[in-house]
Image 1 (cartoon, rainbow, N blue to C red):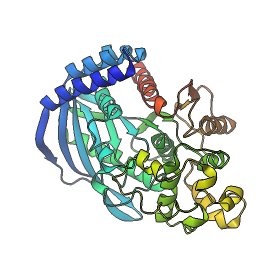
Image 2: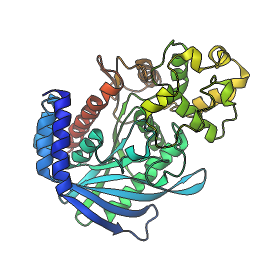
Image 3: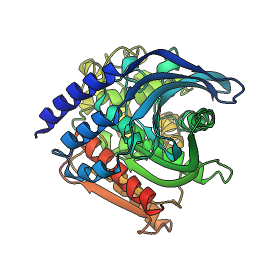
Image 4: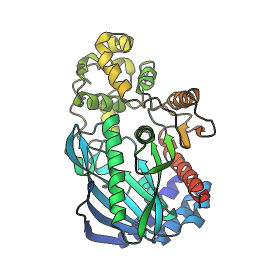
Length: 410
């Protein structure tokens, strides 16, 4: 079965079963918790549809056939709202939690999604996203699935999204994990075993590694981190910047505009017209409205690097003191140096032109040079795959790896 046919089958079957099982605004009010505000049951996915979907998906990804015997339940999918903070102010954030509908004690798998600019594509809003559907279904193999929306989406879509901002990303993801704990504590028959698995792709790969570093540095963190799968993330933003300014063409200019817009709103004082040329400089601070897709944003920009950036920035981004604040912001929001103490895999496409392989390979080399064991930390090149093409293969490989670790401990 071709990938297109699989996705069509997936969409038709999942929509049919899920829509039939949809609930009518069933809400679970929660009182007395520090993080969790409310949990709302969105829909249930029966075991039958999960069985059928995995069988169809196995025609495209043979590795998934190994999951068939590990599916032991359907899943209930909830939207949760929870308390977090941003810039020392309280914020209500949201995300999705998918739990097995069979009583038991389960670990949590937190998946951090990739770059998004549209409010209607957040995990708690977009029920048709193929990757999110697959992830929710993986709760049937014995995980509680956590999918944060990030700030600027879901319940917090009245604020800007602090794109690739380390502090707020870590806070938002870890506070959701605390909210998940409180939610499960209120569920009869379902409990946590405190094990945690982290995964994500692109922005989500970066977010995953940022959260991993923060958790490993916090001896008092409530969960027991078991493994981390970081995929195609811009871990070192300075390296990514150096790569981009050395190109003639960069296919995703909105990534760069998104970063700069975020950092301006976070306090960067470098004038936008000293980094980007007209007419693009005048657009950057207003184009991220939550309604416009990445493709449409790209159409408002240019892929020609020498036309996008000013000559001064291209020649002096790392030497001219006028750009020191930009360099500092990129450095401060790159993943800090650390040595992983849990199994860690870095997945990346060898043909990726959005976040080039050099970023992942450099981070892997940094880990090994700092003393990480090659048995503990591994790089996994996805041969011939570009950035979009690596999303599902990396996700499938991550889940299969987590299942191997989880089931080996039983």
